[in-house]
Image 1 (cartoon, rainbow, N blue to C red):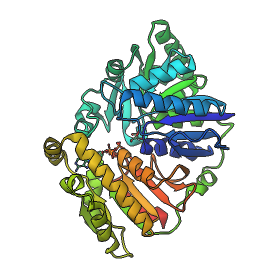
Image 2 (cartoon, rainbow, N blue to C red):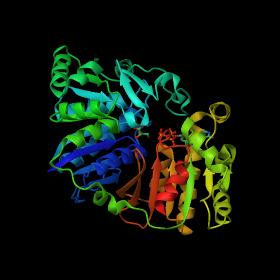
Image 3 (cartoon, rainbow, N blue to C red):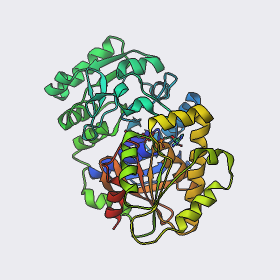
Length: 419
Ligand SMILES: Nc1ncnc2c1ncn2[C@@H]1O[C@H](COP(=O)(O)OP(=O)(O)OP(=O)(O)O)[C@@H](O)[C@H]1O
Ligand SMILES: O=C(O)[C@@H](O)C(=O)CO
């Protein structure tokens, strides 16, 4: 029996949660997209990464249910729907519709909603989501290119896109321990609520909620919740270093590809550009010139092999992003940029690059898919929520960074760990 089956709505979200499971000593495999029915896996946890964060809600539901079927066929004890710790979604979804569909498929009527990761500054207080102490709707997320977040009340966000009603389990209840949380969950359910938004301010709260939801068939949230759950499974905990061994990067040739426009990625790109060769991706050329990726690849190949890896970035600040989106359309611009990053990654792989450091969840998804990578071993963490991973079927290592994760020197840190 597998302890946990995770359905993640994007690639970096998937590696984030997988990294925390491995750090707790759980043997974890990450699979990209729903695998073949025949695939056999031997692990304590399997994370299936989808690209369903911003697609059509019906498509997100279809893929999530297919992932659930695959996991159910492996006799999973518990299921986790992983979405972003900044609740990236719109009033159409996809967190609400997918949660409702998973509940229906499992014959359940209640779950928790917990997009938290205190170590990265994502906390919930009175049901309001904060990013480093700033309400979500006042954080950089209000400028997100695809899913701008303009409210911080998680109950309201959930109710706008889901079928049922949401209630809150406040921090003082978490302070009282797992039994008090279990009782609060029961009380919300008795009131006819379908979703309990759990407050979480610190690691102790994660441990408490991890114990409180130990018997819940479906849970949903960020990797802080998974960290708390995994800490409670003392019977499974192995040695974290040996759990990470299979995913350690080998020495090779690295490239940094940055398609995230988050505040943190902007800072990381600025810090890295000061010391490394860098080239800006021009959106107009992504849209208009089919051969543009070849030109970018030529530039990369012309950079010195020694020293910091070259950086190719579309990362831009909120003001310029707005101008670009007004000029070309948000969807068209982002799709064109993603397409170019995908094509560039393929060209570089063919030219011998084997370490891809990628910023941005959607961008990571496109790069991974275009490299034809179907599964990863999870390696050591570069920053909380960002492990190195190694493809199961090819000698390629990747560091897939969520937009807002990592410290300012993240791109250097990744290369330092890779040696
Ligand atoms: N200069 C740009 N103009 C328009 N769109 C851009 C530009 N740069 C990047 N994009 C698009 O913005 C989107 C950024 O999403 P992505 O998920 O990669 O980063 P993120 O949202 O910061 O990361 P995460 O999802 O991990 O929080 C991508 O679709 C990318 O192609
Ligand atoms: O939870 C997070 O913040 C990240 O794992 C993520 O999902 C970003 O894509």
